[in-house]
Amino acid sequence: MDREISGVLIIDKPDRMTSHDVVAHVRRLVGIRQIGHFGTLDPFATGVLPLSVGKATRFAQFYLKSRKAYEGTMRLGFSTDTYDATGKPTSEAVRVSVEMAELEKLFREFTGRLMQTPPAYSAKRIGGARAYDLARQNKPVQLTPVEVEIYAFELLAFDGERARFAAECSGGTYMRSLAHDVGRRLGCGAHLETLRRTTVAEFTLDRAVTLERLAESVREGELRSCLVPLEALLPDCPELVVRGREEKSVRHGHRFELAQAERFGRGTGRLQAVTLLKIMDAERRLIAVARHVKGSIYHPDLVLV
Image 1 (cartoon, rainbow, N blue to C red):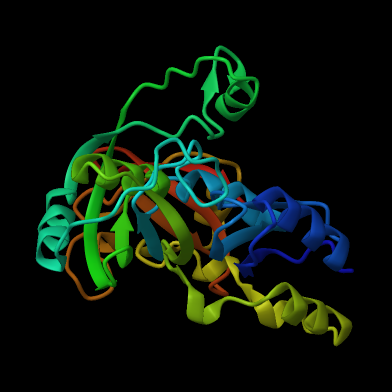
Image 2: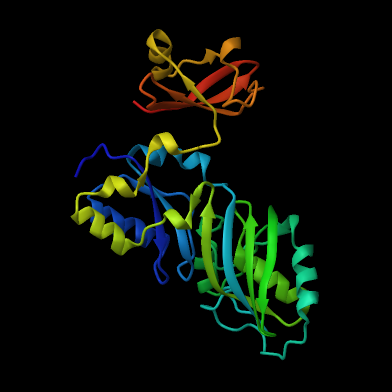
């Protein structure tokens, strides 16, 4: 297999596999060791899991806090220790007495910036140990609430017990905690029953491939057709084409000053201190990602050599 292959595979993760299981499976499948992921999905969850291949693994720093979108179902009536359907009940099942309008109103109250406590069964570290390891040993787990942002939280359907929803949120948000908190506010308990991630940054479900489809593409020698190329990453970042000495300087990681004539986006006017710039060579191949330092000064934080 060509070791120079680089890009992002948008995998439609199946349930009952951890994100690390998917990475290991794809490594064996494509014969490339340098594969990572842009944020995990719980084993019971399905959907968009972007895997970075080759040089794309260096782009993880730009994606770990990306905006995400989900669809799922929360079950009202009792809570669980994992905050999802894989856990043990932590409250007695009770009859749910809530109207759809009341639930819609509550969902609206959970939008915006809020403090959220991660589940005890999570990969958060406490004194060097994973929270889920402590929880499995029945040891106390004290996690600090963190600020997250829920951009949208919409009730799609409600049958009196199960609420189907769609949500958009910031990176680091736990949908399991959101379901648990909804149940606590209602006083009847709740947990996340199903979850499907539909979007991570620019990576969407309609471009995702199953592991079976990926295996077929590899057998047919069409792996590249499944990859999002490096040049297509960070699509909202303006591009700057460099040549000659400028290109050589960027490739050596030297900071540079953006000339007045170059301070333009794609027809949107002056850049006005854009945080990131994609640096392209004359053939429109991505050679670096530069970060704004001050004024018109940029530094190539990531150089693809």
